Image (cartoon, rainbow, N blue to C red; front, side):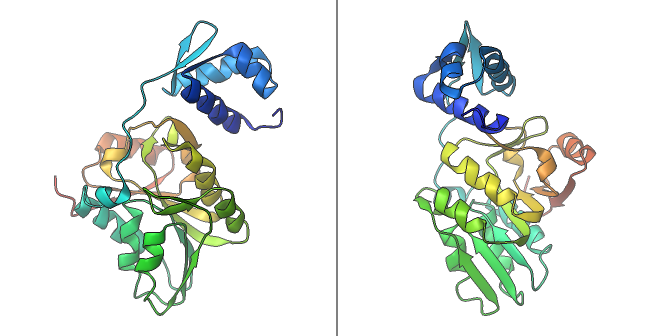
Length: 261
């Protein structure tokens, strides 16, 4: 465990606290083979990110966020905004590219605007996206293996991550449940975190799709810092002040129109 990178250790500490409800610095020090001083710093950082509450000698779990509804249900929430975001993303894709489209209720609409592209290769871990592109004659569809997350119709885990090692991609298009200017990208579903990170690291250009309801939210597990994102596409209901904060960090922010207020 001593070789764990910091963020991986933070995620594993968070998993222990969420599982048991609390943990002491001494217990975590023994588990991960690092000093109690290091663990206390880790706990302070997790508390600062809003993931746990510090307690005497350790930390306690916060009340969990409500469970995210299944993708089939979420596809209908803010549907017009999500379609507008997806259309904006599809306009960034060039014929002949190899791209990845991740699972999610916003990314799910991207294939609808790609069917006329030529010589496109689309890699995905989302079963619904693969079927949406199945009849597109000039698109080669590559589906990752993995363990199916039923609520998302997605494939995650070690097999998916190993499959990605064999690929090089021009662009990655992903969604995220929560994005915050200070914390970055976060996700409440811990088993998906490492898969998300592997996906993000497989392309020279990362395009993040998130409607206005995801901005300013912080979920329980850190996925990636904002500097891993090249382009962030959101909708016209996004808070203009927050949008400018993202732009000030050097992120190319595109606003999709036709989102009803």
